[in-house]
Image (cartoon, rainbow, N blue to C red; front, top):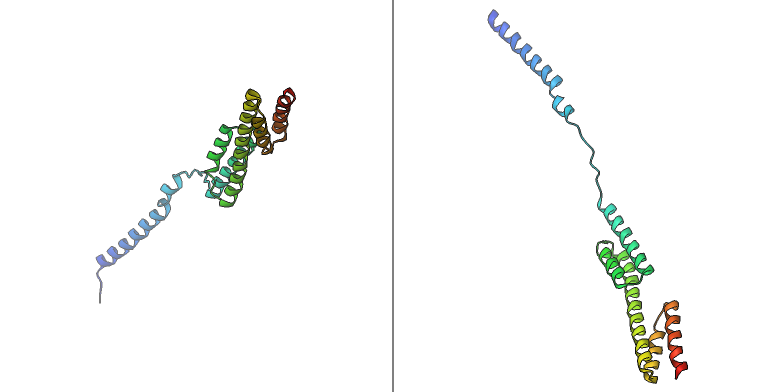
Length: 155
């Protein structure tokens, strides 16, 4: 087969165009990607969030231990709800339950001593003694026992 001169020229021009377009693609094809600046975003993993929640709950429980009040126990309970690890959650919940029980016992003992102070009856004094015996906080226990002994010496 004999090809004409025009066919060879068109074939060479086609090959040159393909090479030229390919070169332009490889040179300028990645410019759009290079101009886009990638700003690293801080990624917080779930374990980091869990650790922060655990630390916050531990701090809240410690604050409740230092300041035994219904408000501090409620705040610690709210912080504890965010903790995902069941083992740590149960451990902190047990501490909160002990604090809540102690706070309730203190309120009951204080009310019993106030009742005994008002009535001065032997039954109320005995009930106050029994309520005081339930307390674990030695300072509060001693304070209420001193008040109760003052009643006993008056009778």
